[in-house]
Image 1 (cartoon, rainbow, N blue to C red):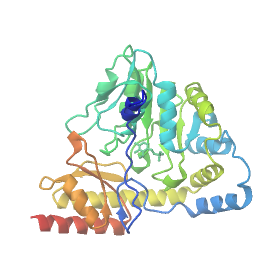
Image 2 (image 1 turned 60 degrees about the vertical axis):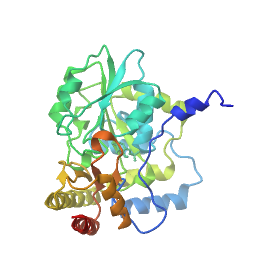
Image 3 (image 1 turned 120 degrees about the horizontal axis):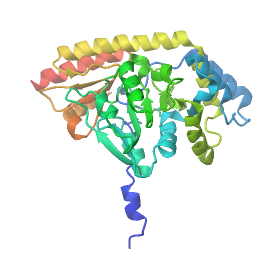
Image 4 (image 1 turned 180 degrees about the vertical axis):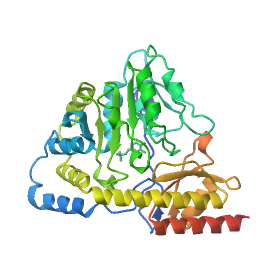
Length: 360
Ligand code: PMP
């Protein structure tokens, strides 16, 4: 006999993360991690913390980390709200600020799939707004939304998995047009070439910007992300956080994240290398006949007119190269490929070229 909760449990559709293989030596280009180790400064700081302080509870407010991020972005520390990866911060945002009786939130129809998962989890009304024919976000779709009907707008900039960015001018036009809607810009990939909206935070009290240390700072395993907004808006997240998890960041995460912001030279060097390799990969793939969307991220989103993307992804896997294929109608012929080290990128290109030759 089915219990009353069984339908409810079936309805809860979790986010499906990219594969983390437990067997074999794969070239892992499927989850947008950095191919580089974290800065040695981060490793030293974490090691020292392990040796000296692990028996102590962490600072529940992450005060030092918030100060360091505030200094880095030239904003007050109380504009910063850290969490266990930006996924956790997003959960607090959806829970705290996007629930408004009779109003919906807007996000692009092709975007980070967690938004839809959270909207459903928190029972929010939402509308997924189609990207244009070039796979771009048309900012006018959001500028023209009615604040009578819409309480929140969220999109990544650059968008994922398309990799395409909107300009800072467009974001400012949106903020000017929509003072009564919470506008959240998810900048998970911003360090690879887009303009951050952080510079607009003092001016717009409805703006919230999210970032992560998982990509450009090589710390996906540490789980640190953060939101930035004026304190009156962040208060909503603080209240939700305090109801769930009053020690959100552990000691190692706080210390490691602080050290990451202190080693700017390493950050600059590794992100530049990724940008350079992205341009290399984009050119080479275009040479092999792929359609390559213009990426401002650490991945490329590509499609080949002659070969099915799911088949290609499976063939790459057989050659020990993992990429991401989304079984979603409009993008089912695309692959998202994370930029690896130069060596990994060269193996990718060589493998693709062999597969294409053998299928012709
Ligand atoms: N936003 C976007 C657009 C992402 O692609 C990701 C990574 N999958 C995240 C947020 C979450 O990153 P994290 O939780 O590792 O900070």
